[in-house]
Length: 139
Image (tube, rainbow, N blue to C red; front, top):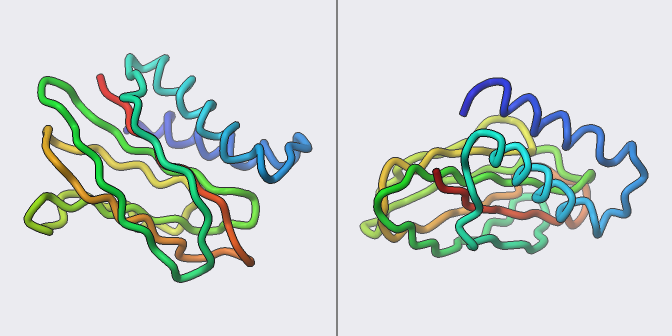
């Protein structure tokens, strides 16, 4: 991901709460914004996404199957109570393939090839219960 894409998504995360969006709509709005940003870069949603909520320190592991012949990006977003969301992608053998453990609320990872993966989403820092979403794009 280019730095301009990361900045645009981060900017969307920062501006959305100021726009007065209800907390329950924020994750959906941020996923839609991520879709717009990636569409301009030639990426389309794969049809796989996941939304849920967790408290600080919790994690959820999700299964995703990515088909061959494409480049994939997984993008995560979370609500205004969230300070840090992390993604770790592991292959079918449990080996970490790629991760975003940066101290931010919009993790983005590039998955290098097709296959069956487990995506561990960790709510590293939030105030209370935080909503999050993860979406897959392909090019």
